[in-house]
Length: 507
Image (cartoon, rainbow, N blue to C red; front, side, top):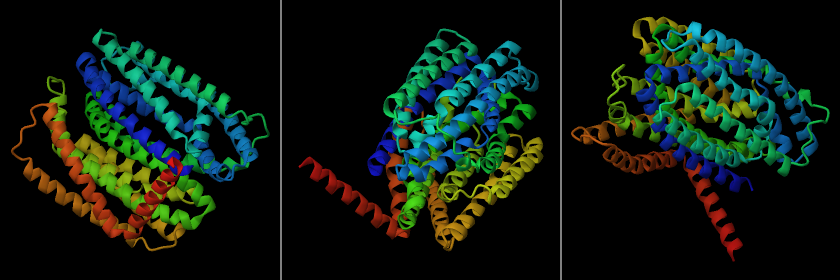
């Protein structure tokens, strides 16, 4: 059952990402061309600012996720009900506080940021964006957590894909007909209401045994305060760049930053989708079968790293030719920069490549024991970014991110290896070193091959990118299999086993 759900999660997740990428690439250009870089920068800044309001969630979601792995694996419905009851109680409190905070932020944000947009426009965009999270806290957030732990993320993914298609098409129609950014946000909020209604109806129909009125198990999610420390540090770490740029450099620079984040972030989201598709199985295994977990962990670490390095290697080769085509005709600020791709990719490699170590720390529930490390990471990012942004601008905030990631990624690897897995970290560092060397070689070889090729249109660009991807991704996976033969054999045996099972069912 877990294998089947894991496959569904990955397949439908990637399918959703293909749709999201196709539609997501169109809209930002329309926003820039139709409404200007300031409007695009405003959307990015608002989204980042609202993430800080998510601190009101106080770590409830992550603590609930960790608490549910064991009872879900054991099908202990009584325990599930009590944990969900506690989560529901906290989320309702948070929803009210979030609504009030969103109102305050909407009133203050137009005063804080440097922009030529009207007060009403900025106020409305902030408030409408915040309301989507309010309905999440009140109605659907708790249900999403349970479905994720049970391995039903594919249901949420399919729903999200459908809503994304309707939302994106509506945005395109509205932009082409001259509607402003406020109308876009009204439409976005309306579709969020539709999504919420579907999830609530689905839960009422398929989880009739779920009872949120039972006495809550507050102790089960008692680590939420320690999780909150991690979330505060994480939010400072993840959103420092945009907020610093908004104040110091203005919304046009934020638009440039957000453009790179959008493009590279699509890859990161696709990788996270694959990871999330199998994460529930790893979480359940950690709490029920440690030997099985170690096998899954090694395979996850090896092939997640191969996927991360290979996809960003392809992105590195084609990001600048794409941006030249994508931003043609946009003259209010230059989006093409030969240095930025390397800085951004460094952050994503360090961040995504440590996923295995990060997940085992979460499965173990070591939120309290590692919170100081998370604080140090955020402090490094904040201090270095503030110091460097004044002299280096957009480069400076990325210097801060890279410095923080170098510290925390190494810390996670050492902590997970020595404290939790009781093994040497050298095996992990070997994988990192091998992938970095391979990455550099591939970039040099392919850059030399493409040196005299003119990517004059999207068709040529996509064709070369697709062919490169078909070559580069298998190379990274092959090298990963060579340095971790045990994980390769496990994956082959796993596939053979499920193929035999499928054939027996067909017969």
